[in-house]
Amino acid sequence: MTAGSGSATRPVVGYANRMSRVRPSAIRELLRHGTDPEIISFGGGYPDPALFPVEELHRVYADLLTPAHAAALQYTASNGLPQLRAQVAERLTRDGMPATADDVLIIQGGQQGLDLAAKLVIDAGDVIITEDPTFLGALIAFAPTEPRYAPVRSDADGLDTDDLAEVLATHPDAKMIYVVPDFANPTGVTMSLPRRRRLIELANAYGVLVLEDTPYRQLRYDGESLPTLKSLDTEGRVLHLGSFSKILAPGLRLGWASASPEILERIALLKLAADTQNSTLNMAATSAYLQRYDIDAHIADVLPVYRHKRDLMLATMADVFPASVDFTRPDGGLFVWLTFPEGFDAGTFMAENLLPEAKVAYVPGATFFPVDHQPHHARVSFSGVPDERLVHGITALGRLLRRELG
Ligand SMILES: Cc1ncc(COP(=O)(O)O)c(C=O)c1O
Image (cartoon, rainbow, N blue to C red; front, side):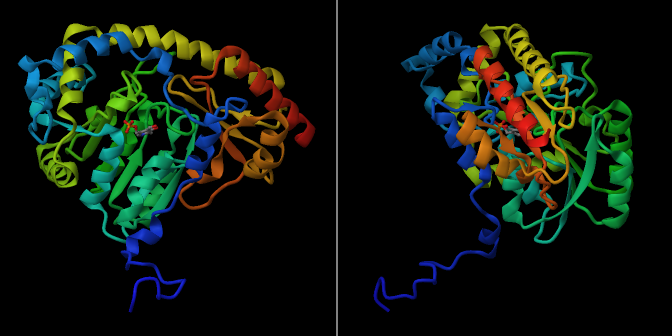
């Protein structure tokens, strides 16, 4: 057969079955609105670039890009630069998860940990338990392993462990429980301590991997930090993921995985297969940054900025939203989750009213549900929108909602 003579419906190459699960996400489409300067987008949820420690990073990169530090441009250990692993271990230890460098694997942001965790335990058709709704990026990362999903209700106290007990009883062979215990994406809610303990009990009873994803953990604006699931783990079944994305800069693509030696060794082999190693330069620069500067002081500087944005957004919503619209009040992170009355379609409303009439965007919530794509929710982020535009955008949203819902 000559090139170009194939049938129009037949793909040029034969794709793997898994590719039927790999699709462009609705969010990618929406993020494009972020580039239209007229549109006030609450959709992105990126950290605010004005808060990146650019000057400090400039200094450490400048020092590394000298002949004396040529090793920063060389290959290095697949598990990550030993010094950076030790620095992360020290931070984990202070956060109630005693660790040495050997207990830490450096990865390409938390996102890579999601991909590797699914590769570790999921064969096609295996069950992953998630919050309902859950992080879209996790659904995207898990998709190539062709899982089935068993979603668990969540409320203001996070994942509902009574529902989890029922879901596990129905799916006793579930392979993984994926959870964002601190300031979840998309809901902003935090899992209570009794529920954290109960989750570990249930995971032990059913012999299931717990994938704990904590990119927002250090962005707490109110209240006391709660113990991580990893720190409550009694049997070495929690794979803990963290990230420098929200506390330093996401462009570094630096995160970490920590788990029992048995699990971490296998995850490290999968990491080696996937990409050999993280960028030596970015690891060396981050390690030097941690050595020369005080990242906790940097985080302490960032917190009031986000706290102010959150307070402004919540206060404006309380003023302008109709009583039939519910919203979460997160103690940290970047997201607020809106719940509209049943029957309301947040996607249609945005396409037909919110965007054309008010030039305001959010993320319609349906995309965050693994199975039952409930249409009456939306995710908004208060990060990176200047105060005046934030108030203007939420006020416009409130006005259109009052008109629509009465
Ligand atoms: C819940 C959650 N997990 C993981 C990630 C991945 O972040 P990164 O790969 O930049 O660490 C994000 C990013 O938004 C997230 O919201």
